[in-house]
Length: 85
Image (cartoon, rainbow, N blue to C red; front, side, top):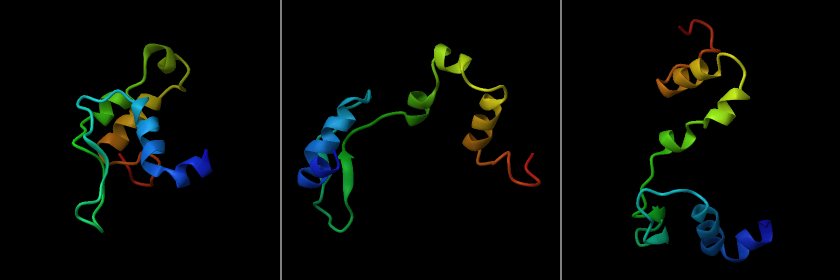
């Protein structure tokens, strides 16, 4: 897998990204028209927060309080740091 990613990075990442549900598909895997400012999956659009939301089955396997910790990260607070509310 590692060798494949080095030999053809665009094909490798296009294959990996095809397994993800996109709201709008990308037009180019790697946009290098403004190098050294590269854009991966140019034109593509997805809602990462929606994709990260666990399914009912996955939620049943998580420890108690995991949803609260996730909510803290979403709002920029790390509940494990001293003084975090």
